[in-house]
Image (cartoon, rainbow, N blue to C red; front, side):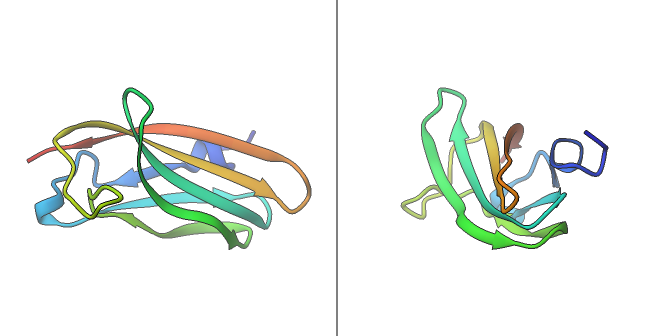
Length: 106
């Protein structure tokens, strides 16, 4: 996998971030057109919030997804470590999924 692939390009900034000061931007590069899911989880694996679900994205770089540090009920999450999981189901048939840690601070 090249550094331009999903695994090498999946990042977020700023990290750590403080929800009271803004959001964190989730950036990634797709090798082909794909349907993308981005979800936030606790360290114990509980779903916190779905950022996007089954959204069609074209090949190339993306930096439009953001997490404001809110859970599915719209409440600010407690400070700590969360996992951002991205799953890309490529039109060509391949699928890949990766997780990275995001730290929330106050």
